[in-house]
Structure formats: C-alpha cells, structure tokens
Image 1 (tube, rainbow, N blue to C red):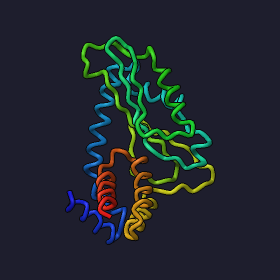
Image 2 (cartoon, rainbow, N blue to C red):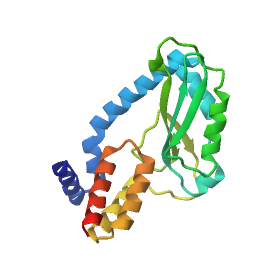
Image 3 (cartoon, rainbow, N blue to C red):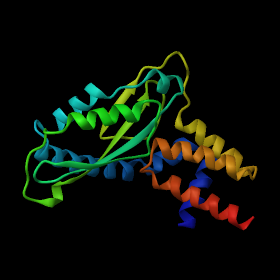
Image 4 (cartoon, one colour):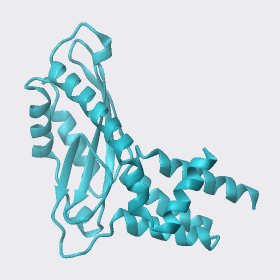
Length: 211
C-alpha cells in the first residue's frame, strides 16, 4: 500500500495529475464497466421499461438548480434503495448528498418510481445502488456515473479535478494537513469510488495523529 502511494506521489512530482490518472484509467474503466453492466441488468429486469426508461424518468425530474450551478457543485450522489419482490420500495438513502436543492429533486424522482417496478422471485434483485454524476459542461472530472446530469455553466469557470489535486499537493508539502484534507474531500465528493483518494486521505490522517 505504502509503495503504491509513494509511486503515485513520484509520478505527481514528475508531471502530475494527468499521469496518475492515466495509470489508473484501465483498471477504473473495467470496474465502471462491470458496475454499470450489473446495474443495467437489474433495472432491465425489475423496472418497467428497463434501464432506459429509468434514466429517462430520472432526467425528467432531476436537473441542476441555479444555486448548484452558481456554486459550481460537481459530485456523485450514490442513490440506494430497496424494492422487494412484491414491488414495495423502501430505505431510500443518498450517500454523498450535494444539497443546493439537488437532494430534493432526487427524492421527487424516487417518489415517481413508485408502482413502476416488476415483481420478482429472487432477493438478489431487490437492493439497488446507482451513482448519479452531477457535472458542469467544460469542467473536466474523472468521475463517472451510471446516469449523468449535466448542467450548463452560468458564465463561471468551474475548477477541474487537477486544480484541486494540485492544491492538495501544495498544502501537503507545506505541512498544512487540514487544508490538504479539505481539497481531498472535494475530490472524494466528486468521485467517491476512487480508492486512491481514500488512501491519500488515510496517509494524511495518520500524519496528523503523529504530530
């Protein structure tokens, strides 16, 4: 683990974020592909009209709010819920909520799915975890979602992933652990499936405890 982190940091010093991103692209792409395939299979089986209709309904209810756009809110909400085999939906959760009115729109969508599910005979098809990426046009992020909600910027230039990773690195080098953690948390909010961010955060927290 430590060797892996050291290797990432050495790459960063040599030429930074883009090279680290490139190193992880193949593995990350395979994981995303497998995850999305599983979600699509479950929705095609359980949701009336399949995964395509599920996405259409979500995009009908969920869009950027002016507040979210003006604050350059970018991130991945992980929507999870149960739908038992008798078509009863329950236990709605939003991991990594983004606020600014976006959570309420997701709740509205969830209510709209009531009664839109097919019955089943296998409990393996009752728990759903669906990443929804909120992103703003012309802002680069490595995050991915099963469904992408894209907003048009309001004339502001929102910062890309590399900007925050650079700030994290500079603050870490200066020993400003608290600030470095803040920038890592922004990246985690954008891409909560990126395990390398959690490893870097753990390293920072261990360093903070030793001080």
